[in-house]
Structures are given as structure tokens and as C-alpha cells.
Length: 93
Image 1 (cartoon, one colour):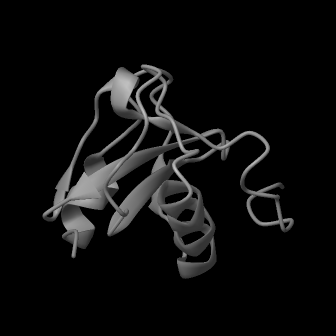
Image 2 (cartoon, rainbow, N blue to C red; image 1 turned 30 degrees about the horizontal axis):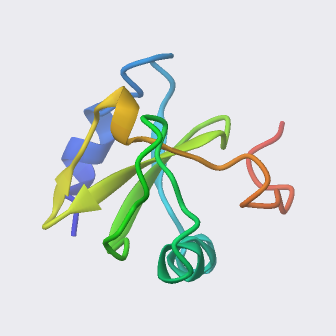
């Protein structure tokens, strides 16, 4: 699990927006895509490993994977969420 103090200081390396932990519903949907071989990161590579955790950018557009409790904050490793994670009204306001 990511240390809450670390989460407080981490920001998206691209936009400097805040990050939040991905919820179980989003991880479940993304892992279904991983199992089907359809999930790709921004670098164009297929994500082959099930997501344990992830950090979602404040605008909800990308997720940075967390492997073995280590956030991977590389732009090419980020997973675009457009079309995958329907917004449920959280975060706007």
C-alpha cells in the first residue's frame, strides 16, 4: 500500500496535477482489459501484468501503475483511461 504521505507529495510528471488511488471498480475494469490483451500504455505496449494499484490523475485521463508498492511515474508507462473509465461524477466541482 502506498504511504499516504507519499501520495500527498506525488504529482503527475506531465501536468503536475494531484493523484489519487484508483478504486476497486476501475482496477477491475482495467484488469479485465489486461486479461483480454487489450490494455495498452501510452508507449503503445500491451500491459501484460494485472494492476495491483494505480494512481489516477486529477482529471481522470491517465493512470500510473503501482508495482510492488512502487509508483511508476513514467509518461510512457501511464495508461490512458479515455473510453475505459466512465466518469461517475466524482471529482468535478
